[in-house]
Image 1 (cartoon, rainbow, N blue to C red):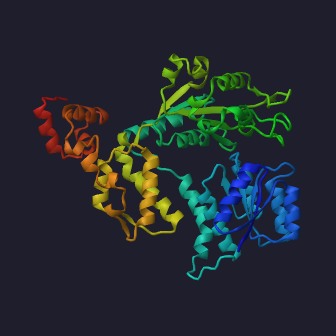
Image 2: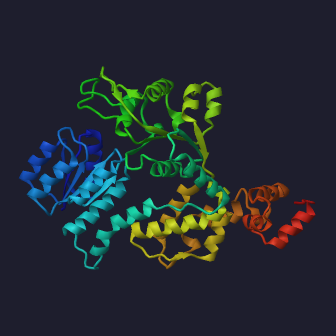
Image 3: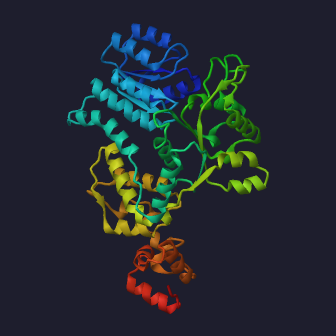
Length: 452
């Protein structure tokens, strides 16, 4: 049985991870500080060590050196919740096997551990996949970091806005439906800015309990409240000199909105329980899938904060409005899934392509990515076929709310006008969007007396 040591000062998170790995058949030990971890390493030998990059008495890189000094075969995986990529890369250069960014999917950390065990030799692999397993994490990171920019008019406009606002210091409001890739847009702005080599800290405002929100954003000092056993660095300080991305900003309580506005205006924060102010230099990018202007009118969101955050707004189009990009994204997710699942699926059958075009994609890019990944996992052939797709996608022609090609919608004329508007009057392009040929479109234009 492989032995794993988790070094993490967040007791609740550490316990959760330990329980998960024990259920997967591993022998798991824990340490809540660097010194405690070193004492365990001196007494015992571990196949894998999972260490947080920030510890109460040291950091993950310092601990890494101690681990490798006692046993060079131990594989060390660095965990970071502050998007400190430079620190993680430094750790890999100094001998760490890989790094993972919090919050992470438990299955993702499990896969990284299995790769580390292949390298360690704790798991035998007679099929000769060990070499492939070693290469997978870097290859997967490359696939995840590259993203299709899109060729549709909607995508081109989006990319132009990103390029325009990125070099400035302006706060940006990213608006879009769930799953459209708002965090990717925010990350793209950061990477194209003058802060690109500084931290990018992403925060899901809907996942933070109201009771600890101030601590999460501004940090706290030891003993400031029950459970504050150590000093904590908040999101603002973690993002200092970099970019702070606040997803689903509309979920913030009114009280926290006041604190956020003050921090942005004064560029200073005060950790909970502290009398000392800390100066911060951050750029803020926020995202929402709701109408914030309506929330302002209803009194649910502060108008002064809204205008402070909305110095520049970007609308991320839904997937249904960039149908020309659909297969670019699908093929990208296919490549990504092949690497992650160690499969070799080549492409999609014609029937699958037609089903994709007829489906409305309410979950947008997130739904497309998950569906492609699921299909790659289930596929036993070189091509993804209809039988591995979810029924609502495979048979979209029977239940789609809006299927241009079938013209079952009573507002057929409106559909044609809408397509022509999105295509800027280009009839050939509009016909492709409607999934009909140009001759049929010309006949429909004549039928409805539509002239351009």
